[in-house]
Image (cartoon, rainbow, N blue to C red; front, side, top):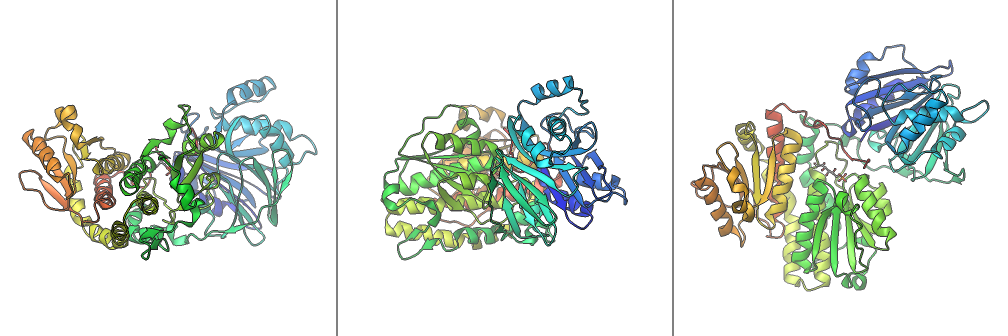
Length: 608
Ligand code: F6R
């Protein structure tokens, strides 16, 4: 959600800023802007409604400076427009600010600043920060002091970078609820809201904590708290590969990330399967077997696809360990004054580790004394740091807005957790071995499904113009249907609804017609006959059916069939989901959608 970049050093900042913004564009892309300054003083600013490419087109060759900040925006306060694009400036055009997050008391501050003579040029909450910092940046006051004083008056969440034309030897950044990472170079320094903007330039990074600020100069940085206490932060090394941030010959990041799944699943499993005891090793849980035995319930929290992955996780935990488990949207949980129980294990799921609703749910649980594990992809992210322990996915960076490989790895991580729980409880060694072997086989089975991409593309082209699509599945298949519908609507904008197959006759059957095709999950399991009956009911109402199945249903029950290899019944949902990713992708391509940057969305929603 919005991207920030900053540079200070001997070189011209502009190329880095534009390149960094292009890499962050997946976080927000309705407007973009840059500001630079240098020894000659004065601010140069360009900002436009549109993409980073639109910004680059209006940045002239003479737009140079050795200190600069940039922003790509996903609108929250005020429509996407040139005026609302960041950076925002004070009246004297001396201070420039880029900001991710929300200033909750912006109206009150704006009224006060207007009374004092400030003239506002945008509808954003961010502009308040520029005027407020400026009001504190009086003669002889260091920029960091002005920023600290201004933030003392602000209620809300922020990641900010601030430039002062009169102090061009520094940039001041601050974090409270929205990430800021410093990048350490050779006699140059970088900052960004996300490491993906930095990895081309440096692997040495420092993640700021909430409530922390930093003064960044070309030769180093100093971190400190909001009450001016110096903090001592050791840099860490980013191990993500620069190649992850290129499409690597694929047409889109999404397709690349779908195809990366055999490797990302292998990484999630790596070193965690124990053949001898037919269980999983999860070193990061920070809970021993005795503590785990005392857990009576598991509550999983996440948003969007992370929540659906949690539903698959809950199913796995209940089946393999017989511990009651349930998944709930973190965005709802945090607002309903949840009852926190000592014998419940809470699990927060997040690819980015920065989703604000999920973070707020974790904080609420911890405040009430609950125990939370994280299932997170991004190492060192806010949610990972807030949790008592957890499982890192090691899926690698996910750039496309729609989640695919992180989704799959999340479900694999839950399978490991469920196996571990199960073997501490009553899952037999034989069943444990069955699951271990099933997990080991997944990467090759995913490869088999990916090889069908062209056939699925033909199918997608045939169905893409439908007025909508129904996705149905029973029990294990229902979360798969929900994720399939989510993926399709997210990137193709085709309306899609997911229903438990068992519920069809209780209402939605009324919708079935040739214009509303159904994608049906039909695994070869104990519910096969029930699912086939449902297909018959749809066909009897002239509905068209695409079955995703282990065995081809009779021709009179399905118009098309995508065959997937059979795993263990508990793991089947993982494989049934892969063709749905390809279906959504190819439908979006057929409809000429902006696959990696779907309208109105952004990767990692770091605001409420
Ligand atoms: C769906 C999608 C979103 C995210 C959700 C949570 O494809 O990408 O629904 O899953 O916003 O994001 P994370 O996992 O980063 O917390």
